[in-house]
Length: 592
Image 1 (cartoon, rainbow, N blue to C red):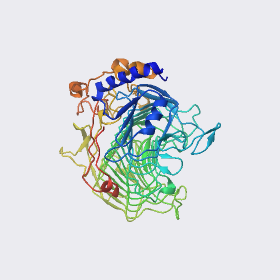
Image 2 (cartoon, helix red, strand yellow):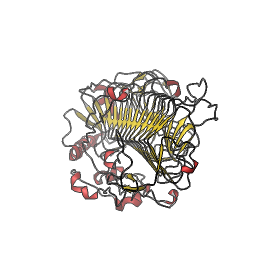
Image 3 (cartoon, rainbow, N blue to C red):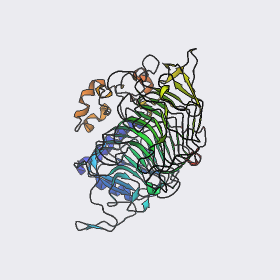
Image 4 (cartoon, rainbow, N blue to C red):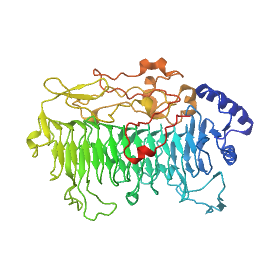
């Protein structure tokens, strides 16, 4: 609720004091505002390098259209309170059409965008919304946050960080909108939490209208995306079929996808030249799908299915893709195999299927998969797919299947190169083609990094990653830095005989700091059963290192627990240049 004018000055002073507890003194150019009128006034006058902070409390029915110009050296910051207690709810949206604008520390809770689109100079209920230079009401309303105004006013070089989108669902579950929609070039979406999406739509959708978008989506936590009953329930959709010949040249890395069960495609890549690396797919029904476009790299990702039905792997459609150094454990091979190399349609339309010519599948580790390991001619005969992929390379992969699974590598390709692959003894009886395979009796041990290693009868390791190896992220690396730690998920036990749907875990709704608990209370019944497990921490995370679960051979993977991580700097991997996206991406900036 807006504060009375008599209380406004005192409230702003209080905000200043509280914020300094978390981040030190405010930047001298920061203006704290407590009402929408003050916010609009501040945005009309904001200059490059300045910051407007929305005060702690609930901001209902907030619709912003930001058209302002920062610079690389002096971006404009639109932020909430540093402890995450600025809550946006109701019929709300933010549209960005400017340059070098950064949004941070906002908590979108039970919000949805307006249904009636209003563009510039349109009349709505008798009011003319004129375009103004700085901030205005109006614009396209198909996302909570989108990086454009109207149809063609695209933002450039903007960032959204340290935000939480929680249960932002419409009353009508068939209403379709996105939570975040990217247009323009060189945006970064990082260290956000997206939880509880239940309606039709995509959490992050990138529309690649022009070549060379150079976006970066990193260190986000995607949690509890409910199952849908059709297409358009992806977690990330990167491009459309009609833009699939354009170069995205973007990076999706180091994100955690947890219980993302929307549809077959958790990540759907539909442009060229992108890198998808270092992500974790944890107990999520669906796959990472290279659906349209060419020349993409998928490397160093971890698929931890915990034997959950529908927890898939990677689908390869289109040409010149490389899938390397990925780790799969307890997945189901729901689309035909853990890794599926697709056949194509003659004279395929852009929204059809192009055969996976020149695909390279190498150095992947597959353990306890409940289906085929690698499918060489996926989809053949269905939906008009009659063209086999050519010049496919399958090299140096290790494949171990569950006892009731079919075969490690299925399908026939006359000109495929298969070499150096290791098959665990047990399912090779159904294997037709054995050249390029070595069958070994293997044992598996969990290493200190949480991953399994495969040993032969002499105790020697038979597999090594080459290039960027997968790594188990901790919660301190993903999501906003103002969240208190949650209790761990528990021992990661992929060998459990319990059915995945019978495995219980705590509801992972993060909890605000105790200072802001009253402001964030609201409707938090889902978190009530977790109160006893929260351990608020102070400004020195090192004091609480004992709270961080260990990762070792004894207890398996227990790295998934929130830790406070103020002022994080994230270093980009620079070990190789592939494809063009890596070469052109600028240096990573620390969190301000």
